Length: 317
Image (cartoon, rainbow, N blue to C red):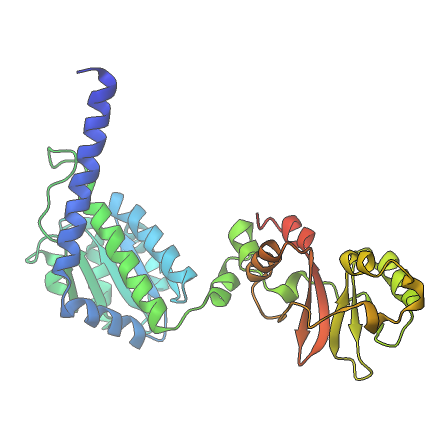
């Protein structure tokens, strides 16, 4: 067997081992999971997530996932907790403490603090009789599964299960809170994800190309040229958007164009979008219709115009 094949065999074995453990974890979920959710929902403060070593790294990620999906959370390092950071853990909080063995000595002060001040404690460990799970108000037991290293000394399968359990808690809470993409954007304003969750109103231009339906085409051409979008909207006397004039409309009415009124050249009932809609939806609409602009409309009245280049500049594609 070549070295490359050996590497691939090892990689496949590790992934299969962890995948099998995740199946065991899914099958093992019971009423304790619901109790953990109820404890978190009943807390007026934050979820304090803690763990030592590899469990600490997983705890940081779980805290970040909870916080970004509508459940206030904070990671507290157990060793730092013993030197003053216990002051971060209040009676309004609920603690989520991770330890594969359930006997991690650095967790002792944090566990004792939760018991002293009656702070709800959710413990995650693989040994039901461990100190952590015996002290916990809710014990989430990881099913017995071998570590992917084969020797049982490297936290692999156990940390993968813990991470998946944290994700399960976060998503269950998110769905209960009816957490929407718009809420998610509030906590993710930067980067490509933030751009994809931007609203049309965040990107649109309020200085719109507009003419009245009774305006001559000379005025419409002037507005199209001045505004630079290649189109103009057409409104009625009450300010409602009733049509749009594009370069295609101009070509179709080239013969005697300047003798027409805007209403005679426009395409009626144009495609529009609401200002509160996701810009991602507007981009999809423009791409599917092979158009470059959309008017944002509320109560039939134009509020702004979005060009496909605005989406590109925002980093949406």
